Length: 347
Image (cartoon, rainbow, N blue to C red):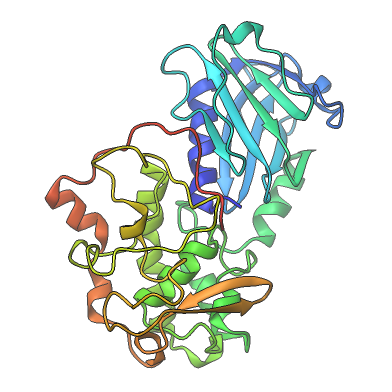
């Protein structure tokens, strides 16, 4: 399942490719009949809140987004959803965004026949985007959009996010912090990779109850997430390691499918095996202390942690205050990776 930064990249791609254009909308699969009602409307905006995508449509360009007549297509990709882009050169920053590993189609994009599983096709003057396999695809009015925003926790990538809502919800709960970070009602957009990595960087045991953490510790988690997720939104890559730690035990235990990220073929990109501290590193030595990384089930997902580094619950590691983004800016490693055919699927 794509993590929140991926959905923000998707919203940006839709705005760049179709923003302020009258577009054709259809449902080749036939399961999204509302697509016909929006056919010919203007794609006025696209926004992400956590893992939810909201695409705003207005009847014509004279209607501002947010007007009562605006309709929003809400999409949640879930485990199997994917958007595939095709069009003129420079139309989209990636061929595909989402879980399935599908190569962007080649040839004249205007003649591309949609796959039978295409739930929604959006076609503009320079390209098209096909949605397949989403968990949710529905049309909402303004009140429906508001309900989506209200029920979700704050999103570290949104300018209107209130981190104190996150602090309050965590500290009011007896639930383990490792579970709370995956609860989209507590914080929107964090998936399994960010959950594992942010807890390691904070040196927090995933099982510690939220109410046992100080307000400062919870704010520290938020403050660490923001630059990490901004980097992910900009590049399509999750990288949480400090440069000086990347060559230490540079291994990862991937499943057969692997954890694919944008720019994996770019020699300037940080390799996957150097990108994470604990995610998919179970049984391997911790990069910092050498203790074997553990994994276990937590709320139906696998959590990864170092039992030594993450046994301290009362303080944060000093080095977590130094964000990878700052180091990349100094070293020149902050260059945008080349466009890839897919985004990471786990989260």
